Image (cartoon, rainbow, N blue to C red; front, side, top):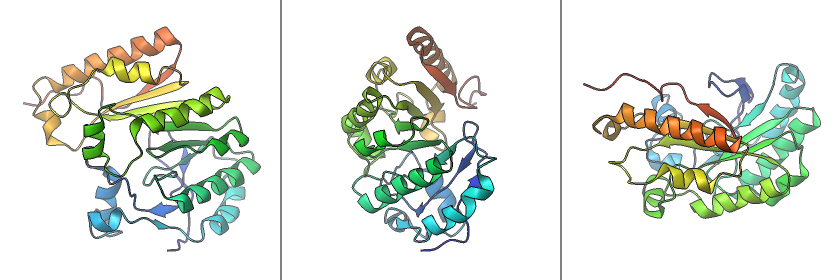
Length: 254
């Protein structure tokens, strides 16, 4: 698969510019996955089965070398990725391409951020220390992870890989999003926060597009309580944090 362009400005609140050098994602998240819903809506894929068979963008490096000089003065941080996963679990070809993308961007003086449900490779320690490496952790419950993130890396392995980068001096962060309500999985948010207390930044956001959330009585009060816990935890541990828009004080369902 080839594309005509790669880098684009994102409307995501904590993002800047991004690129997606693959179509689809083998993790097959069932929250549901917003990226899959949009890909299907616009005809980029026809089915879930097609979505979980990712296609790499063959001309990624060619496009990147054309576009980086044009965008380098505009980009504050280049994010990998919003509609796919740069370190897709057990897809070495995508991981290798992701590393090349990071190298190309860093060579132009552009710092990058990464978010994955796969395993961050140890070789990232050799790249720019201005880069930021993140993983998604919404639960430590293996049964929940198997059901909602069926193709993703085991949760403890994700955390261990991130911890290695942190201990090696890299900037690390965690996305606790989309965080489920207790009727989806019973868990203690404090356990998740403790497991990732070594990171430099935590992003927290609620689960959208799932009617089970709004069926949970007092779901907004629940998310408000979670936000308070995240802020208190991050303040106490001197961790930067960001609360996603719509997570705090949204209107209650009737």
